[in-house]
Image (cartoon, rainbow, N blue to C red; front, side, top):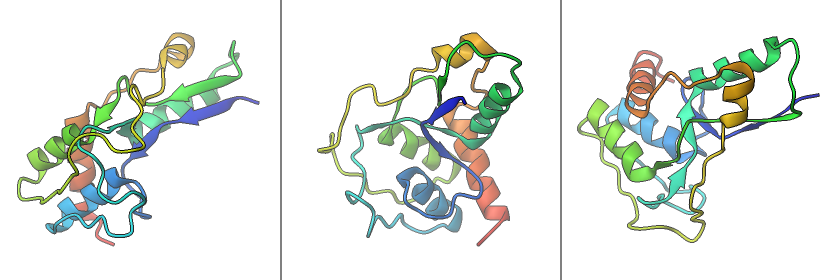
Amino acid sequence: VIALRIASPYGPLYHSGAAPTSRICHAAAKGIAVDFKGARGGAPHEDHEVGAFYIKDCGAAIQRLQMAEKLPHKIYNIGGETGIKYREFAAAVKKAAPNTQINLQPGNGPRHRPNAYLDISRIKKDVGYKPKYDLERGVAEYIDWLKNHPE
């Protein structure tokens, strides 16, 4: 059995709205202000770091692990190459949908942890995984997908 520790993917078919990244993208696609009412902790803090990465990279990583003939480890992290601050995520959303209204809280919140992303060096070395989607590309594709697949 191989255990996967998956960071915070965002992308098509995520509907719960629990993750602020997806909540932001859904609002951007609908052209409405982001509503963080009911979100755990309220609006995220702009300097809070999250291990957000695009769902297509997540799928590619899982596929590589599933198809490997032999793996030298029992646990693999799946995520992006670095952590992303919510203000960076918001900037990428605004680039894709400039009229999006996102009200983030200033600074770091009480749940802040520095370097809050998973180290993916093991999966990179063992199966050659490398994320293909940078933040702007992933966010733009997700928002475009949401616009073309309304709920």
